[in-house]
Length: 150
Image 1 (cartoon, rainbow, N blue to C red):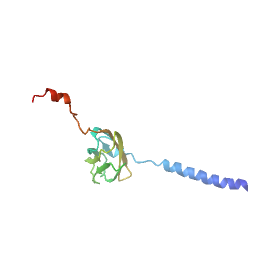
Image 2: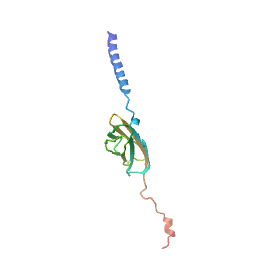
Image 3: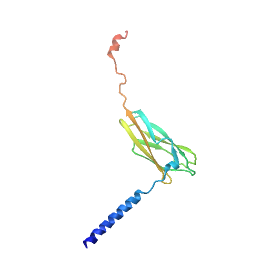
Image 4: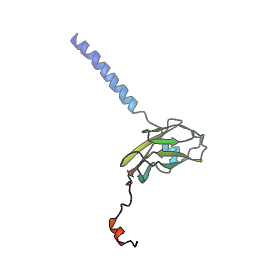
């Protein structure tokens, strides 16, 4: 009786583990056969703190079918995408605008995920560094007052 009581939970545990490995083996379609990205990691370089910055992500439909964007998901509220769902014809080049509000102090790394019809998706990264400008960019020099003519 004890063996039976032990085997029942063991059976369920093995079944659950098998179900998890089956889900993890599900393959996502290969987006590189459908869309060509001009860049997937954009460097903003140094930008002033609090000043919005934008870049346009250029893509090309390299498949033989039309392509539609289902969603563009950002990693945080500091990023704003501008996009149209399509359809985009075979061979057509299209763009998504990605804006960043610049309100991250210092180094930043952000992600945007683009979801296409048919289960395709691509993660786009962008990074850079913000800097703060001093309130008084050129401090006064009292020695200059001495050499100025009246």
